Structures are given as structure tokens and as C-alpha cells.
Length: 498
Image: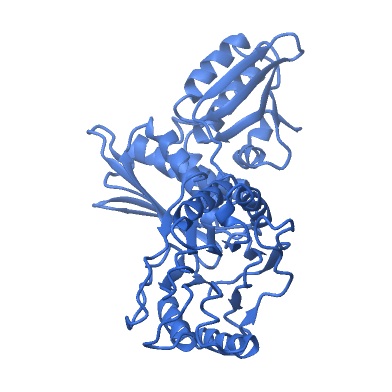
């Protein structure tokens, strides 16, 4: 959810004599390691810092900075810079804007003038990596397929030095791609020339391509190559290694009482899950309709003449782009008497029309509806959506516009088993039993089920019996239109597009 975040603090400095630096655990959806080595020069030490922050939409922001002043006053300056960094990221700023904010702040903090920082954001939904630097060494990018490279481009100017931070570098990001961020203490530990240090560092980073190293092992390998074992180094060294994983959405599961008032709750929870899974609205509507019909049968049939039991809804997105769904109860569905109920029994027909596959299994232990839906959207389903939110509502508003001919009845919200009968009775009164011509405006309806379809049929038949014809206005080529046409309502009513 937007605004929520998990923080990973930079590890405490580790003496160079220790065999293994302190590395952090992974962040959900990423492999992540951070370590540091303390410099021996206390006048220069204490100025290196790092930050990692999970953002909405499965994104991860990481930053490494070097406060050139160091010393006793560095802690306060670093705290202020990190606070500004986190605030800007949570506000949704891109990496270049984040650096401009830090630049403005550093101008007010004498200890921060001339400091450097690099910021990167991993974005698995848009499959890209964005990075910018204010005078800080460019990170190393280690793609799963391809050579390890230093990111190209201008480094920009250090903070508060009357120059602009570097422009944002953007590159494709795939699962398995890694990035190494560091402070210059890593490169200066062996007193190598810049060319030799860069080459050694790049060679060591490239070893991740072999798949033999975790991020933590790679971090240890890099520090082992770049820093002299057992010997003091003057400057602090901080290193982060991040590898993008496959950020998948957990499967959906909801266990609820099989009661009518739970239909909207299930629909809302399922809608939120599909929004998070980046499933397109029209696909989501089809899935919700099918699940709602199966759930409605559990409510109406499974526990007839006995205390209501429970219904369990599960769903998962497979790599094939298919959503696998099950609705299960422990009751026994009764057979519908179609002769006595002319407008019932459409629920599973509509569900079957929405799904690619529907299988109904009845047994002594209960009834399970198994469905498969092939997603039609080109969106990366199964990946987290960026800042999306479920906008559905379980409230239906009915507005009567009597100044129009025919009288228009506008509905907004969700029309389902919980309110369809009430709506039928209200509209029936407005039409005086079908004798007053009506246009039902469904442009604001976000969801309707077979109970709503039954209501449409009953209103259409009442109009026909009075010599009138019901008109229903729907959004063109919408799921609402498809449901009504699939039900056969066009035989009794005029369905017009808008």
C-alpha cells in the first residue's frame, strides 16, 4: 500500500580483522546484502552511510552516501540527509528530484557540503532500474545475461557545490539482474591506480553471473578482493549488493460464512487482490462474476434447511497467464426446478460464459466449483501494481429522473443478490407495474450478477405485459453489456450502448 515502508538500517561498522563483514538479510522480492568496514583514521571515519526502503508496487529504493567531513558531527548530518531521502521517496519523487532535495538540504548543513550520494530504484512492475548520482561513484550493474558494467553517464556534482546532480540513468530490469553500490573506500583500500581498481572490482562483480554467489557471498568476495585482509585501511568502506527477484503476488484465499452479506465482502477482497496482481479491470470483472455466481450457489443451495456452513474461495495466477479459481463448501446444492423458476439457474451459465473452463464437482463431502480464466490483458499480471487501489463499492444508489421520457432510473454501484430484490420492487413501483416506459441507466454500475439479471428479466416482462418495452443503457463493449447479452435479455428489452 502506498505510504507503507520497511526500513533496513545500515549495519554497524565491522573491524577489518573480522573474517566476515556483517551482511543483512534479504528484502521480500529481492536478494539484498549490505556490509561495511571501519577505517582506521578516526578523523575521516564515520561518514559513510546506506539506506534501503521498500516502496509501494513492489519497488525497492537503495542509496549509498559519503559525508566527506566525517568526525563527531557526521552522525547528525547523516541522520538529516537520510530523513530527507526517505521523505522524498515516500512522497513519490524520482531519483533526480530526490537528489535535488538533498542538495538543497546540504546547503544548510556545513558538514554535508561536498558530500556524495547515489540513489537507485528497482521497479519490477515497469521492469526498469533508475539511478542518479551526486558526485558519487556510479554503481556496477550486473545483468543475468551480459557483462558487468559501470553505469555510464555524468556523475553530477557533489551536494551543495553549486552544480546539478547527474541526470537519471534508466535501464531494463529483469529477474536475476543485480547492482553493486559502494563508497570510494572500497576502491582505495589497496592503493591501486583507479584503472587497476576499477578492473579488479568489475571482474569480481561479474562472478555473480555464474550463479555461484548469493548477494551476501558476492559482497564478501568484493571486499576480499578490494581490501587487504588483516591490514587497516584509512577510509570507511560501505557496500550494497541487490539482486532483483521475481516479485510474485501470494495466492488468494478467503474462508467466510456462506451468507448473503458475505457476497460483497468476497467480491471486495478478490477485487483488491486482483488490483494488487495488476489484473486489468475487464478481466477482474469476469473473474468476480464467476466467483460471485459460484459463491451465491453456496449461499442459496449448499446449506438449505440447515445451519449455514462456510465457503472457501481460492485463486492464483499461473505463469501461463491463467487464473485458477476454486469455490468450495461442505454442503449439497439442490437442483433448481426450472419449470417453477423460469428466470433462475442463470448463475452458472453466466460463470461458464465468463470462464475458459468450469468444472462442478459434487460429492458427499461438499461441492467445489473449479474454474480457469485466461487473462486477455497485456499487463504483467502476477506482478504488483504500482499504486493501484480497488475502487469497488458494495453500495447501490438509485436515482429517478422524472423529467425525461421515458423516465430514466440511474443506478450507481453494485447490483447483486443483496439488493436486487429491493431494486426490482422499487423500479416496479416507479413504472406502475410496467405501464410507465423506463430506461434503466447502468452506466455507473460496476458489477451485476445473475440475481440482477433476474431482476432485469422480471422488469422487462412486466413492461411487455403492459405493451411497453424496457430500455437498458450500458457502457459499450463493457462486461456489463456482455453479461446482459449472454443472458438473452435482448429478446425482451432494448440494450443500447453509450
